[in-house]
Image 1 (cartoon, each protein chain N blue to C red):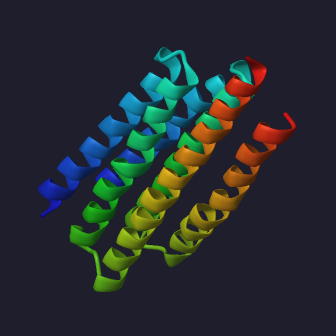
Image 2 (image 1 turned 90 degrees about the horizontal axis):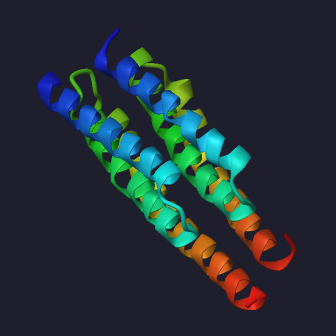
Length: 83
Length: 95
């Protein structure tokens, strides 16, 4: 196991507190936990790409980084108006 | 060079661990929003720099890592602002 894998596993373990906050907290706290979890997921995929030397993980992490932006923005707008 | 990469990755992991700890420990929404800033602006830059200076990194791989870091930094700031604005609007409407 190299440092990239170790860091990736640590990032994935950091997702657990985000899930706890998202499940137990209010809607706005879940939204904040989602933002942190998205950053953790993107970083974990980037670290896996570096560790495995596979280009496909980069594409997945890039897609996640780009697509998470409008979705989280929509959640924030929905929270402000309707939730 | 691998020592530099290991130090950068350890710092990134430390920042993320502190961020998720703060997510649990801090109580108010505005306090928790500061955690988002640390998680999306500091750690991705450290990982992106580590990917750029890695031992097996080609120039394209390094550029891609930095691109992801740049996206996270820009989007994270915008999303923190939007979330804070929504939370503030809801709080002022309810009072």
